[in-house]
Structures are given as structure tokens and as C-alpha cells.
Image (cartoon, rainbow, N blue to C red; front, top):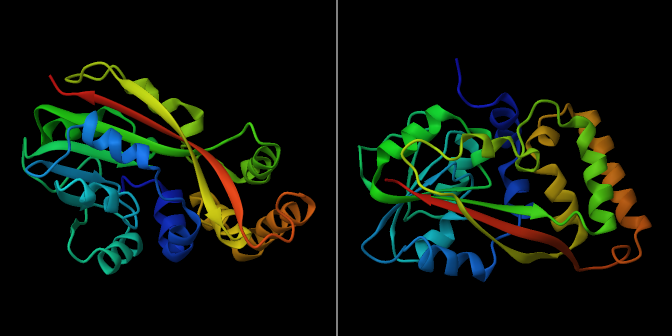
Length: 255
């Protein structure tokens, strides 16, 4: 039986290009987090687990560390290989990371850990980390303090089903985790700037459980999103808008 959640396997496999267009990159503060709190630099090795299309992988490469990306969904992995040909990209998943014991100084899950937040995955992550290695988690989270962002979320929520999400907080249940120390956290403001079609419509289209909908239902959801844009003064008729996010980071070291 597949260990990949069906919503992830189907939704992320359908339209990797929409994911690339619609998902924000990461703020400069995230790069500082990698260098200062996680210690990534030349000479270090890092695994990007659930690397997707490589959006966060780029930032890992910039630290000078040696990066190996692990991604189970072929369409996402293929897009990453096309965009980042210099990065080693492996087929694998959180319960079976195709790398030897104690091989990495750090392992990062960007926008991904909620999909596999369980004891088996944490044990496998601990296996590939060196003693004193670090697990890092990062999410760009929509800023729900903004009215139109809350409305956007209300359009998507009815289709969520059983898909795990960061917002639900269930991913925290595994911490403190066996073999790991205290979970630290920070947050940074962030914005995704671009056309409404890119940063709002494509953002919704890239959500796993929206992408996995049948074609007519997905079209109706995106029509509601476009109607929200047209009805919101700070969005309507604009060639460029700012989608507000909060970037949340967490990290803990192995014993």
C-alpha cells in the first residue's frame, strides 16, 4: 500500500506548473535561519525531504551545503530536475529515505511535514541524521488576519476532506520526539507579489485537495476565487497584488 496520502499523490501529480507559479518563495529571513540556527554552510550535507518542485531546494543550495532532494511524486520531481539539474533528486518518501545511516547534518521539510508527521517518519529521519544533526520544518502560512484571505480560505475549506494540513496542528503531536531535543520556533512576515492570476488563482489551484477535484468542481472553485478578486477593492483590476503570509520555522537537534 502506498504511504503517500492520496490527496498528495493525485493533487500534486496533476499540475506541477501551477504549483511553481502559485506558491511563494521564501523570505530572506529563512536563509538566515538556515545559516544561523541550523548551521548550514559549505562542508555540510542536507536532505530536502518532500522537496516538491524544488522551491525551497534553491535556498538550501545557496547555503553552500551539499543538497540531496527526496520527492515521491514523479511530476514534482521531474519539474525539480528540469529547474535544478545540479541537484541530486531521489525517489523516496519519509518512511523510506533512500540514504545511509547518519549521512546528513540536517534534514529539512518545507511545506511538507504535515503529510507524514508520525513516529515512523521521525524514526527514519533520525536514522539518516548524524548525532547532533538537526531537523528543520518550514511553512509559508496564509495570513488569516486579512479579510480577503479568510474568505479565500472559506472557499477552499469545504473540499479539504481528510487531507492533513499545517493549520490543524496535528503535526505537533509527535513532539517532543524520541531521539530529538526541544522543538524551537520562529516566525517572519512574508508576501508573494504578482498578478492575481498567479499569486491567488494559481495558489488555490496548487492546493492538493483542490487540484485533486474533478474538472467541473475545480472550475467552480476557481470561478469563486476570481469572483472574490473582482469583489475586493485592493485586488480588483490590479496587475500586481501582495498575498500576505507568515513564514513559520521549527527545528530540533538529535541527541
